[in-house]
Amino acid sequence: MIGRSMDRAKSGLTFLILINVLVHLFRNDFRHHLHLHKTYRINDGNLSSMLLSIIYHMDPTHLLVNMLSLNRYGSEIFVHSSSRRWHSFFLVVASYIICGLGAFVGVELLSQYHEYQWEQRLQDARWSNRCNHWLCHSINDAVGRDFSSIFTNVW
Image 1 (cartoon, one colour):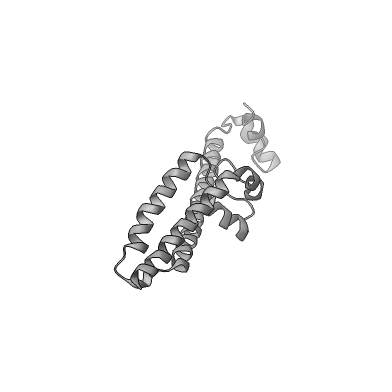
Image 2 (cartoon, rainbow, N blue to C red):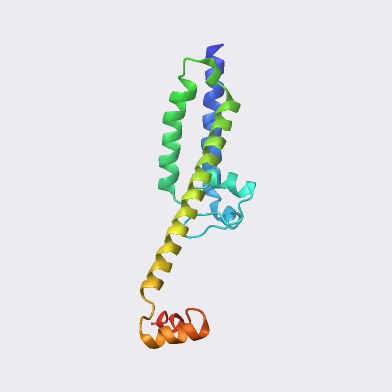
């Protein structure tokens, strides 16, 4: 009985590796569904894009390292575990999806934090480069806002 349950966990790992390899082989067909940016953020945030991002790998090296790690550590956790509770095809696939969604949320939060930091740096740089000449202050006071920085930000 233990051998059969271990086989179910191993078949779950094999299934995940096979799906990842197939998606990688046809990755050009899936690329337009992801709407990727330079930071690999997914713009639309729908569920199909989030699930596809879990099994989408950019290059063969990325795929190889991830699948070797999945096989190595997945076998250790799910197949060679002393608890029969972990020997389930469904549990292997569900764990993979939950961890992938968690990673997606983490990357999304880090990307938003990075964009916030970048905007703050740009704003600080613009503020430090604004005109401090008496004429600029007079123009700004007359207009009621920082009008002279429009010209100083161009250079």
